[in-house]
Image (cartoon, rainbow, N blue to C red):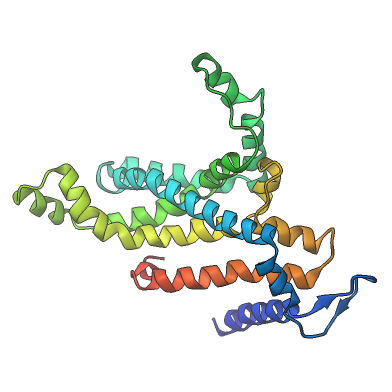
Amino acid sequence: MLWLGVAYLGALGALFITSLWQQNDFTGAIERVWTLDNFRDLFTIDVYRTITFRTIAIAALVTVVDALLAFPIALYMAKVASPRLQRLLVISVLMPLWASYLVKAYAWRGMLSENGLIAWLGAPFGIDTPGYGLPATTIVLAYLWLPYMILPIYAGLERLPDSLWEASADLGGGAWTTLRRVVLPMAFPAIVAGSIFTFSLSLGDYIAVRIVGGTSQLLGNVVYDNVGAANNLPFAAAVATIPVVVMVIYLAAARRTGALENL
């Protein structure tokens, strides 16, 4: 753990130091001169502010969508399904993780195309495919990270004593009342624990955006473009510090809910 901590914190330290350097506009070489110009550009240029807020909004939306989809699935797995069916459902949730990320992303690209499966199924009902863009990015990311939300919630609900359901029923609580006043408050740390995965993975993703995002850009794409085509490592490092700072704040807030104990 000490070695991993040194390696991880060392990498973050190198990232932050690189963000304080600059690139020579004429030669493209990195100049090890301390400057805050990269961060000044991030805060003063409108396009980067827009991309930052867009990225955080997409990550938050993916997290909410996954939570809404994962909770009933996890609840059924933990409290309704038989032990044999429970094992089968856990395997079913894990199976998509065995497939390649790229295979799943390109499969969605085919389904979201103008002549894809979604357009074909929705044609009789007057429903068209959303095409490529931010809606497609949200759909694909929500699909990719859904298992990471289901499993923590399932683990949290499985530890929930059945006697609480019986006590709520004895006190006159119906199914919805029990769900709202007993189950959800106790499952909330598990939901937050799952959100750490979905939020952080969406915040740093750039591959799905390039495959189904159309012309849309998120922070991951800005980092990728500046590392590759522009070869501006200092500015890429400065952009990469934004998700790090956002996740530090998010983890600090999640820690107060007891969510980290559910990981």
